[in-house]
Length: 171
Image (cartoon, rainbow, N blue to C red):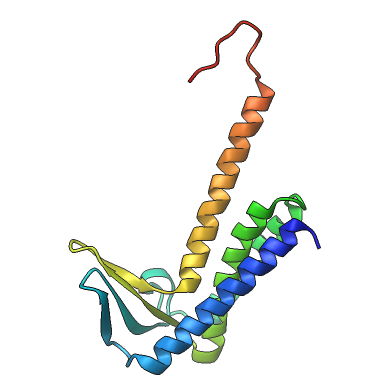
């Protein structure tokens, strides 16, 4: 198994397992709508159920819509993974985080017809909408993928236009 596939499998399975374990813990220990302070008012755990998408939008759409969107996204990510270099563990990890997160929320949709959200941040001026570890995996994976693309583009540009002898490199 190539480095890319090992990194992908570890990131996807780890994200999915941690997400489902954390949601089970919240479901069994925190009554719905309660908030348990962890770091004062800044950070706490809650138990909310989100039938919609990000920030609770589109709650009136049927759950099969969200299942369909998730399947299309997973197919897209799968195509990216298939096309990436077999030694690219960075892309494998990033795509694994995205897939693990998408599968974590998909499991919730099948079992509960909604997603369990529980991480709550109060930034004083703004209370960030509660989210879960699956959402975090998706966001972190997408961020890593963007960093990988930017770094790759910068590397390709540097290789395509090397400094000419006698020219100073810009710093």
